[in-house]
Length: 113
Length: 111
Image (cartoon, rainbow over all chains, first blue to last red; front, side, top):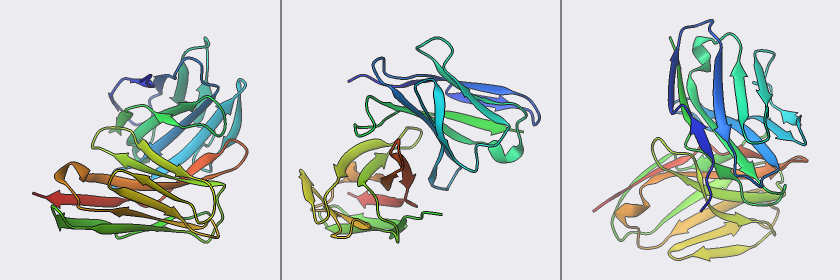
């Protein structure tokens, strides 16, 4: 079965540093998402991306966050100046159409020290 | 804020027992999905229910969507150690059907 690939699997960074989390969605998919899961808490929606623009974002997705699909295959999440509370598992997900099955990547565990 | 509350939060049972996990909300969703998540992995879709009152079976797992499309249940018959994991319900809303995840139920099946 095709899969969503995320790199790196673990990222450790200092508070205030910029990080870029990378995702390669399934090749024919059109809808892309980032979710995050703080340890012990529920999975939270961050942002959805369709037709090369953000279609919806949550309150969590403030000005420190941005997403990009630079080359038609990668989908990145950038956090400009990380905070301690950004420590979480970040999941990328993609699907072909709005109503189809959503495929999740294995996640990037971000630790902000 | 749309909330999906799952109960119980934790469940530890013996192999062969039956169990039911509940997912409740005050909001209506266009569809509701159940996921299973293993440690260090992303959620994996088990089933999607769309119609109020719908019942779907996946081997020993039975999923039901409430008539009003606000709640759902997952019933596991004769649980096995391989069923151990975090079970998440998620409701779909909005133009891109973003998912609102439930609080999760951590199931441990003891051999």
